[in-house]
Amino acid sequence: MTKARSLRERPLHFMLLPAVIIVLVFSYGPMLGIYIAFQDFSPAWGLFGSPWIGFGNFTFVFGVPGFFQVIWNTIFIAFLKIIGMIIVPVFFALLLNEIKHDRFKRLMQTLIYLPNFLSWVVLAGLLIDILSPSTGIINQILGTFGIKPIFFLGDRFWFPLTMVLSDIWKGFGFGTVIYLAALTSIDPTIYEAAEIDGAGRLSQTWHVTLPGILPIIVLMSVLSLGNILNAGFDQIFNLYSPQVYDTGDIIDTFVYRLGLQQAQFGPATAVGLFKSLISFCFVSLSYFLAARLVNYRIY
Amino acid sequence: MKRSRFTVQQIFTFSNYAFFILMAFLCLLPFINLVSLSFSSSSAVTAGEVKLWPIGFNLKSYEFILKSGKFVTAFLVSIKRVVVGTIVNMFLTILVAYPLSREKKDLRTRTLYAWFFILTTLFNAGLIPWYMTIKFTGLLDNFFALIIPSALPVFNVIVLLNFFRGLPKELEESAFLDGASQWTTLWKIFIPLSKPALATLTLFCSVYHWNSWFDGLVLMNNPEHYPLQSYLQSVIINPETFFSSSAGKGGDYQNLIAFVSARTAKSAQIFIAAFPMLLVYPFLQKYFTKGLVLGSVKG
Image: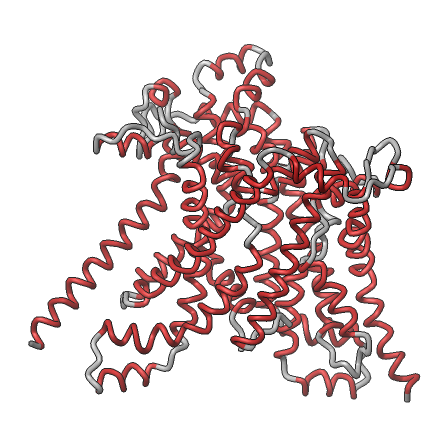
């Protein structure tokens, strides 16, 4: 019996083998590389030859002027994005749900979900063009209202806000689709009952619709906790410039410049590790909360 | 009383439609502007006349891109990447999702395997160790550096394994009693039954590969090996170098340069890079939506 069982089990291990090897090398391999964070690493000496310097890289990086500003920028931008990504999709889903014309509804859904499928390179190219203070169409439109050109991507005040708004523009369709799906699963008899009880449209939204999708809102909010240090590398890397480093530089772009441009491998790995550890705590916390609050399991 | 509520309802419905039409226009505006720029003459673009309609309509920018060669090379690398990358992704996703969807009695180490994969989504070693690992494996500047490190999309595995688990147990039990092996069960029962889920995941993988740019930029030393989005990234960050480096290729080419500006050429390239997504997306949106809901909202 046990022999038959292990014979039946063997192909399963065999199926898993290629993926296990690849994940071992390319996901667990880098985890060994974390050792670099504690070394005065030089590619010439390699992982085994470079001298161990304990927390030297960490004290060095924390002493870099502006490092805490980078952390602040990251949290500030990421936090505003998280808040926006909760409120805007719910708002749109509620309004879209009121539209009874089915084809119009589907068309809108298609349109607002579209930017999700374009890369930040494409969208950055687009934004650089339309936001240009001299030739961009946005400033031309603002100009007709008598507003002076705004340098959205080159001004230290406007840059973070532009990041938050354009990210919401790209991403809110995703949430909207999820909330709409949740809305359609609300039992229509509850609405009928509410109507018999004399509830108007607005109070139906407040007392039936919102509570109906609340579990999904809670779930999405809790899961987004894990992104508190992800301010959006793809977006910011393609849109920032030295004049907005002050308010726009985030941990990921900082690590990129430090590590791959200035070849400061030790300090860059240290910052990356610092970020990963904090993110790990937040992601774990978010899964824990999701499991406790709305009984969500990833698998 | 009744009458006045009816009117409020009407006003709401009307402004709701108006709001969505306005939003749709705002979402489309950048794209319309981009397309108009790419088809306009460079003089009209420089004069800032082009808004929502091409002025001095011509195809010179597109001709210019096709003749510059680099764009075409990058485009072909991207096509190759999408095809090879998606096949590898789907192959491994299926091979991992099937064993993990078995009951614990069929695969005793199931939990261990599951955590082995899930841990990689919770903790990430960071940019530098990732880069060092790929360098260590000798994949730098090799096409397969774009394929192998990201060969197993763990979130897709979770979606598929949840789908597999939702399939009726009786089918596989009867197949097992008929003496079918694990491979036959997977091939003859699970794969045919999961076509919608597989289609969705295939689309996700192709979008991922088409849109990826960072790995190409960092891992390829020779710009000839850049996929389209990485190439585009270098063009957007530094459009003028693109021009100077492609100048001096004979009379025909010089002729074209007189008609194209960096801005029209850039717009045309962005448009072509976005085009496959714009083309297939409206047709496939229902799969995306289905897959999204499949992965995110479940009991």
